[in-house]
Every structure is written in structure tokens, then in C-alpha cells.
Image 1 (cartoon, chains in turn blue, cyan):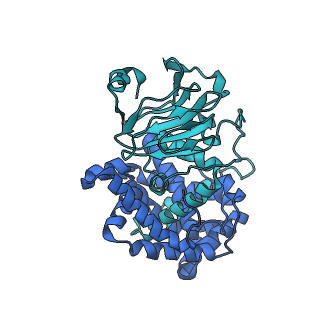
Image 2 (cartoon, rainbow over the protein chains, first blue to last red):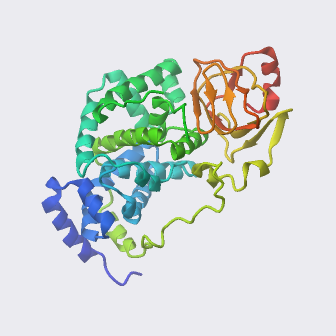
Amino acid sequence: MKNRPPGEDVDNIVQLSQAEMASADWSDLLGRLAVKPDKSIYARLFNHFAPRVKAYIVRLGVAISAAEEVTQEVMLSVWRKAHMYHPDKAAASTWIFTLARNQSIDWMRKQKYPQYSLDEWSETACESGQGEQEVLSDRVAQAISQLPEKQAQVIYMSYFEGRSHGDIASRLDIPLGSVKSRIRLATEKLKQIWGGDEYEH
Amino acid sequence: MNINHHLDDATLISYSAGALSQGMALVVASHLSICPQCRERAEHSDAVGGALLESLEPETVADDMLASVLTQLDELPTKQESVPVTPIVMDPEIPAPLREYIHCPLDQLEWKRIVPGVAYYDMPWEGHGVSRLLRIAPGKAMLAHTHNGNELTMVLRGSFSDEVGRFCRGDVADLDDQIEHQPLVDSKVDCICLIATDAPLRFTTLFGKLVQPITGF
């Protein structure tokens, strides 16, 4: 049994969050949480992201019956790992997306999804300034919405349904190569957002 | 490290979307752990995921979830306590993501011989394709084959050449059914690769078809 009823804490925090939510800059908020644990900041992030995380993981294939539990785990890890977040490196939505993806897969496969360490983010040069990721993030969303239907379809089937290239190919009854070229074309369009990659492989 | 062969955009998107098999994701994560160029591209792919997350129609979560989570926050370890333990094996030959599954130097693994000069070590999971380390002696060639799906190969030691080019340590060959190839080891030492396929290989010679059952591909 808990000695301290959580209710009081929550009421205060939720009131605060609803008043300021509209103008909140999520990456800035998460960046503040990275520097110093703060429950009221966390609660505002929670109210915005938990319902979206749940929507995402259900689409990805986590059973409805487990969705609440996995969402809770993801949101707990936001608190636990907040100190690893760099606002100038990724938007809050991107960072929380990777946590939700990894934990959903771990849950569905009972196997850890192989990852490169988040710590290594700090090794990559940070060229963009504070707040710029948020602007980029908006542009990414806009660019996705402008993709031709066939390209958007393979992107959605990848991210929202977790389908492999082969799986998408058989679903759409098109060759594997077509799935990959559609994804590549979509990526080319999205690349323009980052000022075009100078490197080819 | 001078890396000349990188991951395909379509593979990076699939990795970021969480749509790769364990084996394929392991090769991708291993390459990302040593390739800053691909890592930057992977971060862009993750940003696509972030934007899509933000675009979703929110689902209702239980009213008491926030209260329950806030109560649990006090019980969570602080960041000092939650720093991950440094892996026991720091063999620089083994990329960090692979160290989860390989706990000794590559030479000490229990390699299983397929044919003289070719041996493998399987990753501890099962799937539609293969996920293993492959060790091939100098001058030996893999049997000519193409793929029903994708094949990812990352070189950990030595080098090989095929119809696409020459692949050295750190390079990744990201191939699909558009390519038929016969990799030939051209280094003085054994070539050790981490490979994964998402469907069985298709050997293109009669001999290859005959030995397929015993090679485990």
C-alpha cells in the first residue's frame, strides 16, 4: 500500500498542464526534464504523448489487452531515460517514438530489438541549433502529407503496421523491388528537408 | 574506419519502423554503431516516425494511468543508478549490438563447418531467413546465389569481392532479388561476416541446389 495518495498531486498537475498545453514546445519541455526531474513537466508530456503512444503501439500490433500496460512502460521509460535526451538532436516526438517502437517490439517478440546505443548520439556533431529540430519536425510531417499516395502507402505500412518489404510486396501484389523503390523515392523527397544529403552510396 | 558500402534507404526506413526481423535489425544496428553517416540517416528515418506519431489520432488511456505512473516515479532508480553495466567483452572486432549475443572473441566461438573452408555460428533465434556469422577461408567462394528477399552482410574481418564490388571491415552489402552474386574471399585471413536474410537464398547452380539442405540456407 502506498502511504501517499497520488490524487492530490495529479489534480494540481493536470490543471496546470491544461492551461498551458496549447503553446507548449514539447522538445523544450522534454529538454527541461532531461536536466532536472520535474513531475509537473512530466505530467504535461504524459498527457500529450501517452494517448499517441497507445494509438501507435496498437497499430503496430500490440494486443489491445496489453496496450495500456505497454503504454505505461513506455511513459515510465520517458522519465527514467530523460537525462539521455538532447533537444538539439531530435524532436521529443522522435525520441519518444523510438522508445515506443523498441518496447513494443520487445513485448511482441520477447526479444530485444537490436539497437545502436542512444549514448552514441552525443558523439555525432550537433549542427542544428536549439529549437531547430522542432521546426524540422513540422516540415517532416508536412512532407509526408505531400507524398504521392503510393509512396505514402508503403511508408504507413512500414511505420504503422511494422510490415517488412516482402510482406508489403505480397499485400500489394507488387514485386519486392517496387516496394523498395517506392520507399527510396519517398526518402528522396524527405531528404530535401535536411538540405539534401551530399553523399551517395 | 573507411567505410565504402552503406545501408540502402529502404532498409533504414524499415529498421526505423521496427519492421525488420531480429537478424536483419542486428546487422543494421551493428553497422550503425560504427558508421556516423548511416547513423545520421537513421536519425532522419526516426524523425519520420516521430512526425507520424504526432499525427496519430490520440487513443483514450485509462483515467488513473497518470496517477499510477506518478506514484511509480518515486520508486524508479535515479539516473546514476540506471547507467547500463559496461559489457564484459570489449573486443573491438565485435560491434556493440552484437556483444549482447557473442561473449567471447570470434576465434573462440564454436564454429560449425558446412564444407571445408566454410563455417557458421547461428544467432540464438529462429525466423524465416538465416541470422548467423559466416567464416570463409581465403580464396574460397560462396556458391552463386540470388535471393527471394533481402540479404544483409556486414564484414567484421577480412574482405570479399563480388559482382557489386569489394567489401572490407565495416562495409555492408545490402542486396535483394535484383542481384545474383558469388562472393569470393580475397583477404589473407579468413573473412568473417554477420549475415541475415529474410527469405531462403536461391542457389543458381545445380550443385548449389543439391547442397542447400545441408548448408542451412
